[in-house]
Length: 267
Image 1: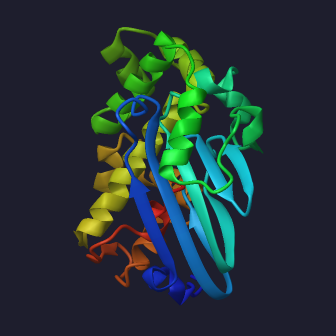
Image 2 (image 1 turned 90 degrees about the vertical axis):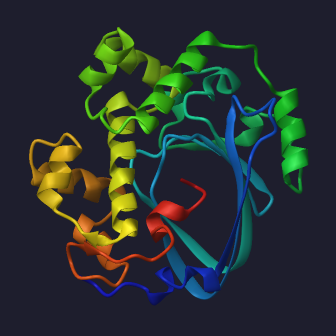
Image 3 (image 1 turned 120 degrees about the vertical axis):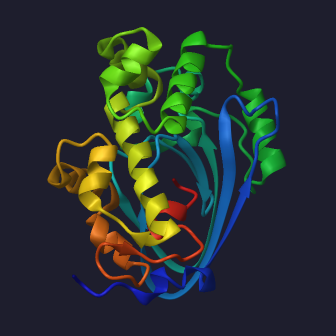
């Protein structure tokens, strides 16, 4: 294993994060607002692991809409800077976009293609005013998509699309169409993402992890399949991820905070 950048564990020395809840009238559409400020005396390569949120970001005078990323990405931070962002609720962005959310997956587009009159100096009140001006008509299918993603996130027992479809009294194909249109990634991807988040929670809780048993709990046929999925999403194997906490392979040491790939607001 290559030696990690020591600044990963000392990120609080270089980064300040803020999170804000949306106003009640925007809560059906917006998950949270976030801001990150950083200061580095030499370039730092930031690992970011995705969630199924479309993001609106403001950085260096530029505003962009970012579709869901299918896997982990790296962002280079250098010098001092600040980014302000809006994380939309998974499933809620299609009425704003006016097109299938899958059309912007793994892409960024100018925010002006979706929103008008965004503030030049973004803050929560200014951005909320702009979002209110852009509010679309209610879309029952968007509401359905939001509810399905919420169900996945809240239900560890849902590890397969067929289980989800049975719970909802629908078909896997119908869910695939709904997710392509409103979420941007497949229901299988969303289920995998939230179940893998539970892995990092167990790591942060501390104690030895039985990887084979955990893979079975998450619905994987075998441990190698679980390792492949984790590596594709997080950019490294589960044992290497656990080693971020200074613990031996297979042991997650309690740190009191989320690991670098799981704590960033771009999630």
